[in-house]
Amino acid sequence: MLTKSNLKYLLATVVLSAMTFQAFSLSVLAQKQKDVTPFSDEKQVPTETRASLGKVAPDLDEKAESFAAGFQGEETERVIIRLKSDTGLNGMFGNSLSYGEQRRIFAREIRNNQERSGILLSDLINIGGEIKKSYNSLGLVSAEMPLSRVRQIAESDNVEYISPDRETSMNGHVETTTGTTLVRSLVSGTTVDGRGVGVAVMDSAYYLDNELFRKADGTMVQQVNQDMLGIYMMSRDGNGHGTHVSSLIAGSPAFVGGYYGGVAPGAKIILVRVLDAVGKGRISNVLAGIDWIIANKAAHNIRVLNMSLGTAPVDSYLNDALCLATRRAVNAGIVVVASAGNNGKNASGGKMYGGINSPGIEPSVITVGATNSFGTDARSDDKIATYSSRGPTRGYRLVHNVTQSDNLIKPDLLAPGNKLIRAQSLQNTNAIIPDLIINYPSLNARPHDLYFDWTTYQIVGTRNGTMFLSGTSMSAPVVSGAAALMLQTNPALTPNLVKAILMYSAQPMANVNTLDQGPAN
Image 1 (spheres, helix red, strand yellow):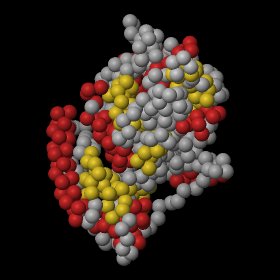
Image 2 (spheres, helix red, strand yellow; image 1 turned 45 degrees about the horizontal axis):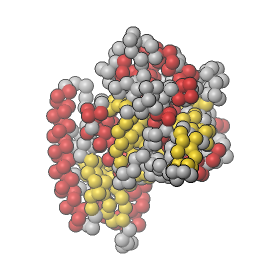
Image 3 (cartoon, helix red, strand yellow; image 1 turned 180 degrees about the horizontal axis):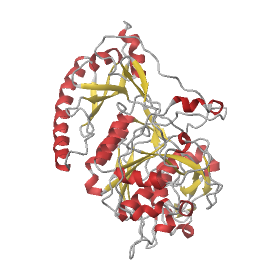
Image 4 (tube, rainbow, N blue to C red; image 1 turned 120 degrees about the vertical axis):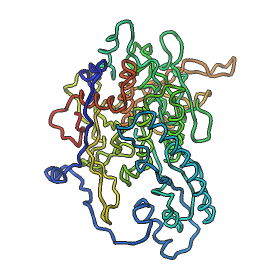
């Protein structure tokens, strides 16, 4: 768990050996059957000889089965196509390569990806399909094509893997309980608040005019907006999720005595909208956002990417498009923090295992589960939130015609995520309340101090509303803020070192197993 004690390592420069995540033995899970909703074991699949075998995601292949078997329909499917990589590693470079050599390989791959995209476009046109967008720095493209031709395209020498453009969605007293206050003055003459560090937040839009984003000097938190949905009204956070997440990172300590301040109030927020007003999006939106973040890393000093969103995992992290993209971001020097998901219990309230969302199943990502602090600063009463997703990871791939699950131990660590009060958005300047408050009025912690001025016919007053939200979506930005503090203190830290320090210094919770709280806790 991210705690008071672990942040004392912020000033240390450490060299740690690479951490190897071993597949978790199913025999350990057998000891806890009374608490566990079982998941399926590895299974044999029919032997097939087609060239596309193993190159199409299982759920997409099953959907295409009836069409390939002879049913001629015109149904189309949005897909993500992974292009074949010259390196064979899809950008995952070994430590033996210099930075310059990595950049040369990366540049060559981008050129080759552009060439392959052109060839693939011709193939798609011939079958009535089209490329929607190319993500050349990621080695991926999104496309729309007839379901009946999925296997045909998969047989191309330029195609490594095809998966559906699945839907993504949000996973819905912090300073004292995490120990952030203890590190504010550790550097002489400097306030440790994340200043100078760019934190990219992939979410809905966010409403910057809320007073929780106003600093003590009267200025607002630094921000950059980028829209991936084509809406271009970033000041209208119709959902409210992105505003709340951003304020957990960069909320001002000048607001209401500092009780609702963010972990890194000096950080620069780069809001990349990939979710709509109801908190939904697609993998292709997220890929476009990561592609933009990597390309603009230097311009905004983007060192941290917060992903309080996810999708149910099907593919192994070796093939999953979100995992491949986030690994690219890590290779580019960006710390990626993702919410574990809110799949920790079933409909009847029983504990579930194997519910980690993508991209949290990716080993290089810092995957964060949620604790319930019960509103107290003391750690003695903290519990794991019942909804917080548990490991192991259950994405899988075909190996010699047998499904092989990843079974990696996740989450990596825990942080507070239950009933956290932070900024409430407005949908627009006419003071329309966000979708989350409309649908769930009980989340409203403090309405905006707004009123209608009949003399000017304008809505005036202070935009200072707050609301409660719970979920691993809330615990992820707590860790993103901590990463920003570390990088302000020591900009030379790599993403892997940031992850290693956080995991090494996390405080374990007593009587809680590894799949609940992760190997770090």
